[in-house]
Length: 292
Image 1 (cartoon, rainbow, N blue to C red):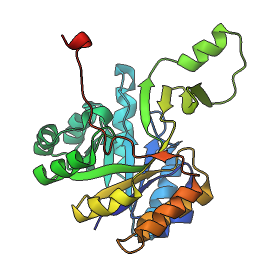
Image 2 (cartoon, one colour; image 1 turned 180 degrees about the vertical axis):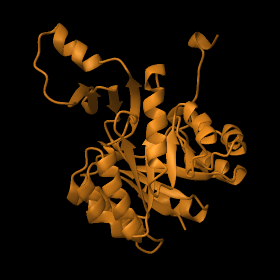
Image 3 (cartoon, rainbow, N blue to C red; image 1 turned 90 degrees about the horizontal axis):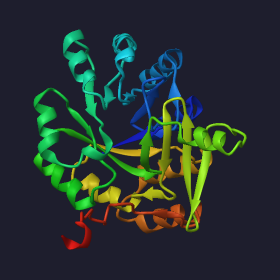
């Protein structure tokens, strides 16, 4: 049976939905990117208590490219996480893999190099190095996800609901733009409007991230993935208000072959049909310019 994993924006969302999810994925301050929010160690300790008390799993993202001057912070942070009941740590930088061996850290690792987690060969490579989980790319098809599951023993986490991260850079793109045109800063959240679509943008000290204009909605596909033995179905809270998030989580929890049409209709009404299937049915095809 697939587990529901929630990426929350705040602790209240965890408390309000803890009974309807199986695991919680949060980001660590200063070492995580592309998360709805990141949390301090004091907050993570509180969250760990909530997940422990409710017999749920806790995963922590340490998924940014780490600079040399951050290696000491990374090592100290990984050691502090070892004192909590953490099921897994998501990584992008391979330094995390090396430090796990060096420090003999007790938790499992999750390969989370976003756009690279697209094939079972590389997943199995990391599995051979002790990495037991993979966060699957949001840019591959449903059939490809199923094929990967058949070819690996790695536990797979599949994004199935929420805005998708399209582009991330360490450059302060928004800040540079505002300063160049002598415009006022208005927090960390912005939008880019293009061709009638609004793309959420997050600009903070870690850089700039642009998200998809639509929500990925894989509610119906969740039934297929459950049947295929996919381990985790990931729901992101980014840019979704609490009431709608609660309904989404409940829908993913109770959906079955008999009520799927009604559940799908509920989601449609909840978001006025403003969602998409992402790449679940769109193959990525690379073409050489002018067919050369």
